[in-house]
Image (cartoon, rainbow, N blue to C red; front, side, top):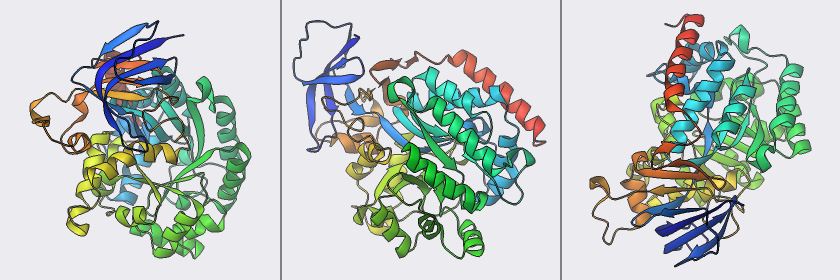
Length: 444
């Protein structure tokens, strides 16, 4: 048994009462077994002095593309469909095993450094096994899956799949990785979006998701042009079509959902579908501003994600929380999307989306030990006197304030030093990888 005692911290629990206390956290193996003042367990392997520090639940990002991290800076100033066709699809088609691995490691390193402990990740068509290897080695908690694309115009040949092969490869990856490391890694079927998937594939994904009881992760209603294409092909809007196919249920995670009509919102609510709000990506691709206040009023499950590095340029939950709050205020008033609301979306809201609200998302006895320790003793976070701790985190803190990250009871980063990822290896290999891909894609 491995034990860790974290002493004398301000603890933002995010429990049902919203308790914020000063005290200790005791971790045994992967679980929190005690929270309170002056804990004195009989045996402790590691003591962390967290005096004048703030502990928060690890962030849960419900829409990420690790395979795109090395495309950072390669898709700037484009709208969605041009971004995909001119930059992202050609680069994804050029990936090899090493580039997928180092792209994933680069993204995971950034996520861990900014306090994210769980992700819902969508990979590309090929080499997904190597992304799973990176996730396994890094210690990140993740739901991930290979992207599925069996139709579409202007899709590079290397990304064009046969329906049966796409399904079989997905099942093979699921059977290898789902439940790895006592459930730290889970599989999620990942059809890219309606435009790139046949009805046959989507119906089979629905059946397989039910058979294996795993999540489905896809994009929907991100861009007005995308919606026009879906309507022309199916006669229905995105969410109506997914519901028609039986995919709209509590296992479905929909990224973006910017342009929903009232019928689609009703379906999402009634079927228990989860929405991943990606404000940074939505703004940079000029896709629009999602109606998150309306969705929350309808008790729709909404969480946060950074999306991919080439449509956001960083994977920082502090940035997403701040944007999620600020972009709504000119429209809905200064009290809309307050700090407490977006912090819940980043923590317990994400846990709800991945079906793990009893395991992660808050700091409570019996839950998994997924947390971040923040050092808020700096110019940009002071004065601290009589300031709400959550407002301080959402509006003032940055990812540089994350000092230590613990996932599944394992210290992954301590005092800003990574334990599972070698930065001196990953950064140069990421550069070498993108050079190869740009040459193959003829994009240099």
